[in-house]
Length: 225
Image 1 (tube, rainbow, N blue to C red):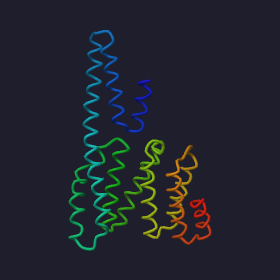
Image 2 (cartoon, rainbow, N blue to C red):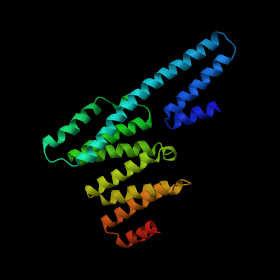
Image 3 (cartoon, rainbow, N blue to C red):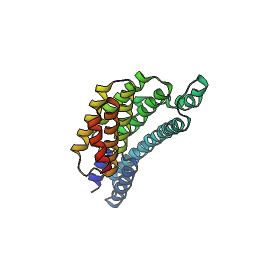
């Protein structure tokens, strides 16, 4: 049971659950025969736990900064002057302390990329915003199983990539991103009503924006029905 739980926790970057697994493994180690192998096993597990705590602390600091940037963007809106950018620069300067090479897990890399493309969105650097959205897309599609445990990371990044593509008049790319999203939804079982609503509303938005009004009406009927 612990072996299966460990694999699941590592697969989805569930650090708190992995800590619980390690705690149970230590309990079992102490219940076994007391010898040199037991000492090595205990030291190995604690070393793993210390390393996990350090990675988790660094990841939490990144997430805190990323969330501060999200909230700052939400209540301050778009910028018009250099002075308007000051609150965003203050937060983003903290993001600059982190490098891709510092993180090996998908979840933390998602937050790093999200911070990068949100800042570019505010600063109006759409080309750079699109670059980090593409990196996010590549990261997530290489870890599609995340959609099962952490669907919000897909919903956020797909929605932002579509919005960016429409803003840049990359209409064909926006349609393609939407198609990938639809394929993902169709591949998964037991899609919740919130995920389905998010997909359909985004599909409606894209169709209206690119002028596919008949298709938009069909999606609208699905949303209303």
